[in-house]
Image (cartoon, rainbow, N blue to C red):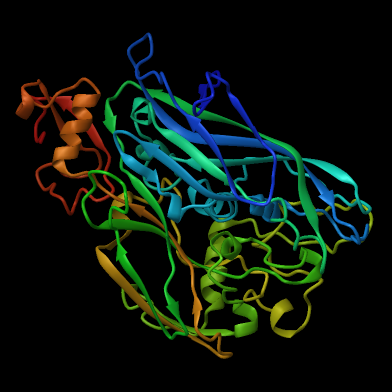
Length: 467
């Protein structure tokens, strides 16, 4: 089939489709406003939003004193040029809440769970340069709706006009945001014009559907351990019309990332820097020794590398990271990062001979199996606080810990009827001729609890079991 996408105009830009900002001393916003989004094809098929894709071009300049023997920031590090992400819909409100999502999370963590670890950008070789050299960069990231877990990835995709008259925005961080990457004491400056463009990919379906809403959240408990509490998991947090409770598809404990010079100084993944709450744990150095998950079958386990082994086996294939050859182009590229089995440059004791190394970007606690093996109804159900404990051999002290989740929610009945009105298929309770049915559940048993994470089909009123 041909590509289906619509290009989004800038917010208040008089119809312009690109926005250009010059990095400066403060944080700025790229802002785009979807307008005139179609809901039905000429053939009568419904149109659904699959993902939002963002592409930014700009330049980075090596700071004075920088050595030509260390590389430019890699894919993970370049995400630090951008900050928080926000998507607002007049019909759904905070689809992607500003305080819970960042480009580093979307580009570095979520690709493992939303699309089976398939980066959406091209691989690039490692680049080097002398002091003052300016290198052009291109950065792409996506804000996903479709997710490769559940029965169909498209079960989570909203009807396209629900995004109409909304806002898509993301932060461009200060020009010195990359100063600690690529060098021990100096780094790179974001320079020149940084130009962004946004498109929404869409697909069609003959069936009228109401998607299962997903909330990608960040939790920030402050503790020295061993108890960790995530408050109000499955809450709406700005998403309009959803009931409390969720099916928890993803739960990751974010790590500080590598500090080895071969990865560039500072945090490799930038999860923590985007929120600036603290340094975060390094699971290799702090020596995570035990995890107790009372809400899972693994009540308590001290073979913590078993979690990583299981995750890597599901992600596969496991990659090996090559040594960088200083000052020369090498076969390593900026997508060949964790997960991998062992980095030859980190061969000392704990960091080199275990999966539990400081190069860990995150520690997975729950991760989705990918269709067709996983059903939405098989996911961990949570409604309220979630508590677990973990022990470190080396104390981490009082710090902010970050946890990333994907929470599959459900709309209330009133909201379902509102969306049906918006789609031009009014429910019989409001004078129309339509009802709805739970797509992957027994409609005779359906209630608020069983509907967590279940997409809905709009059907004629005479459909058996329709609600």
